[in-house]
Length: 475
Image (cartoon, rainbow, N blue to C red; front, side, top):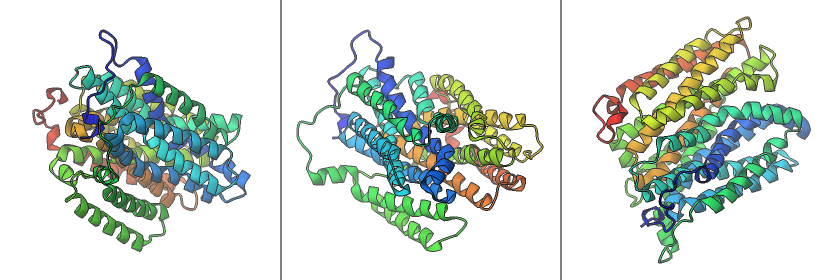
């Protein structure tokens, strides 16, 4: 029996609010560190290259390092939380953030910075899936069938929608202090999250009997985790290697994926429940929708930002501020939608917003009114808000409660695969220079992704009225 199946001895006091600000503060702070760090580095790449005496192209590895670490660690942390307890894994992750951030702040070489970003990626990835389990446990202890939608909405804002905050924050920090500040800024936030978690989140229940190493390996499904690491690593290396196509890498990735599927079909407690994904179309569609949405959103975050800086001549901090409407609009939308637990309407609206925004990118040129860019960021802010709220609610409906940690991590992993795809797209199109023609190529790629997103959304039978057995409010 996993720790999350045992009864906790720390139940909120009768009459008190089980989801007070003390309880949610460390969870929200910890969960925000991953998405913010995913984009925080963008404005520091050029200063790092100058300070380290290296080519700007080499610093791109600092972006991919956190992506790789996070994409792999998110479901792994969720699985570990199901076995060892979410609070333990949450606080372990926060500790890694402090260590990685301090190491990066004092780094004297690119390799030290890469190591720092990997550790930060591993540490920050622990927060979101463990927070989902901690919130789920608190709801169960309080006698609730489901956690309050407002709390889940706050977690969605912190864990997903804050990604666009990294660009303006990074621009301010780099301009006011130095590139090292984007590493050091993690330390006080992580320390506050750690102290608050230690003080205000109940400890995980203790086991009556210790687990053997073999039992731990079996419950974690270590071979499955290693297979997933190999499959994801080779896939992402292939994507980051574009436009040079190393076909042997993608062939090796296919071997890893085939081996992983074969193993997980026989595993007693699978890390990646292949049978569940095959039989649960609603969950599979949820992951695919979220990944495609993040693909287009991150093309805006990175590709359109590069175009604004290179073609329109905006500074890093100014271009970052242009993206603030994405965060503001998405944050305003997520909480009320989460409270109503809607799925069908939000995901259809998100798909339409992605397609409309993608077509709008085709209008960009060196002479177009800059307000068009702001309008596009507002449209993609709508896409983030509706997609995040709808797909997260869909996840809670379709994923088994005992696998919520791994399922939550996988949702974020699909999001990171989308963001990595966006990085590959911008790298391919802007390989030599950034031009209006290139941004139009990006617009066509985004439009194709938007069409596919709409098609997948319409194909999801669980979104049809009256088809979902669990939640009549899902429209």
